[in-house]
Each structure stands twice: as C-alpha cells, then as structure tokens.
Length: 219
Image (cartoon, rainbow, N blue to C red; front, top):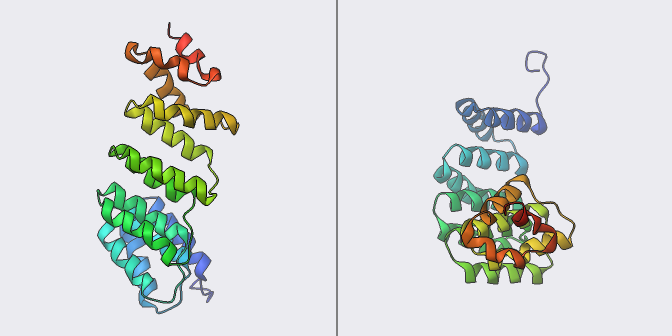
C-alpha cells in the first residue's frame, strides 16, 4: 500500500495491530502502536482498546493502566469495552481495589456496566470468597435491567461449584433452564465430576430436574 502511495486508514491499522497482538508478535505490535501514537493522528477508541488489550495480554498491565489514564485525560470518549479490558486485567493481577475503583468510575464517564462487566466482577468476588458482596452485586445487576446471558450464568455456576457452594449454584442452574440456555461443556464436566463424589450426592435432589440424571449416571 505504501509503495503504491495508498495511505492506510484507521481500519487497516487496527486490523494489522490486532493481528500482530493475536499471533504473539508483541515487539512488532508495540513498535507499530508507538509509531501510531507519535504520528499525532486521531485514532478511534477501537484502536486504543486493541492496544490496551494487547498490553494486558502480554503482562504489561502497568503500561496499559498508564495509557488508560492518559485516555481519560483527553477528549476521546471511552466505551464500556475499555473499562472491561482494564477491570479484567487488574483483577487477574490481584489489584482488586483498582478494579473496583474503575467499576465505580464507569458511571462518571457516562457509561453503563454491561453483562461482561458484571461477570468479570462476580467471578472474582466468588473466587476470593466475598459471597455476600457477590450477592449484592448480582441483585444490583438485576435491578439495573442488565440482561443475563449464557456465558455469565455458566461462569457463575462453575465458580460456585469450584468452591463447593451448591446452594448458591443451584439458582443459577435454574436460570439457565428457565432461559433455555445450554450448559457449556466445561460446566457439564464439572457437574458430573462434582456429583460423582460421595459428599455431594445428597445435594442432587436440589438440582433442577433435568440435571439430576448426571447424578443417576454415577450411581
């Protein structure tokens, strides 16, 4: 393109940048994005989301966080994807306080948390054992009118099964059933594994009826 005098647009740059990050060519991706920033051109939020996600996936969370705050200080309108990328990375890096601060800042930026935002926070609250905080979060999500999706419900069931909290997991299994969502393969595998263990068999009666055959198959 350059040899033929065709100047790449933002979509072309985004596509190449995304491809470099996705295929593990981090050094080339970083060189490209630094040159893009230095060019002084106005890039769209999709560009910055690709950069932030690429940095986070390559363990450069501090650099991504610095870039995030730089974006907050200019006139570029962030979107909920931007916040979700950073919240996910901060949780994975053990920085819960920073992640929760960003969650609070979402409304200050004129945005609304979506189902992905709530899933990321809910999974981490369960993992660290903050179950009452998780219950409050889920209640707030339902009151906000955020629609549940299959990925979130499956993720919550798996997390709760992982910590052995059957009583909390069962209502989310029921919600999957009510909404005609399917169990993901990893959720099914965990369900079978869990209820094949003697200490959990007595919980089988609390499962929605359609899932009780998992327990019967292991008798």
